[in-house]
Image (cartoon, rainbow, N blue to C red; front, side, top):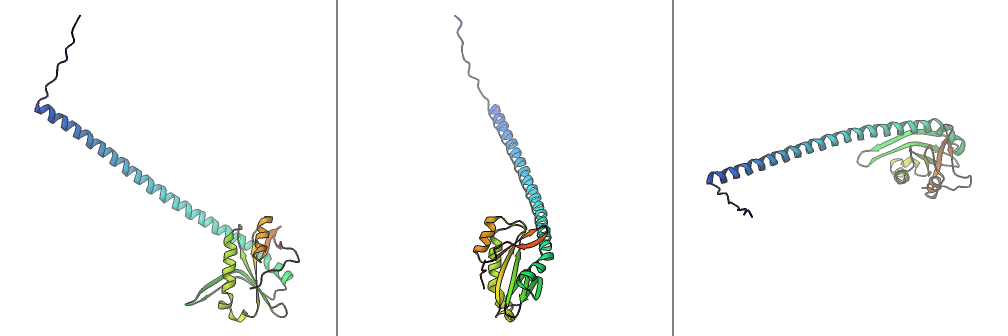
Length: 201
């Protein structure tokens, strides 16, 4: 039977130095590789963020254009609708006013009726319905007397105009006391029943 004997290799000082040098070289290579990967990762992230910002700007631009298109659709028929329904004597699209030291107020449209009705109708137009429309109109109503003191004695009544209003959205608008307005065959129509009583500000 053959006996296997293990012979222990004796390492010289030069062998140990070479081993340390090899280990150090590999560690440096790994560090360099990791640093390259980190740089590449940072570059990819920066490029991705840049593209996302560009896409965000493009989407924002499209939203603005779509919003303007929606306003144009409504404005073209709102005056006729409001004149027939509320007997307007004056119609002001894109009404804007600024008072230095106080702030500004901007309305998509405003209609004024004098005499016995003595009311101001304020319209908030949106391409899609959201709670922000209700909040914006509430804020506008609360600022009307400050920015239009000459209309202080008039009743303030709000309208929310959205191209395609769903039934639950219409009910939500009415619950807040505003007239819901939608589009049918490119014409603005009031979606509330005749006995609806709006909130007066």
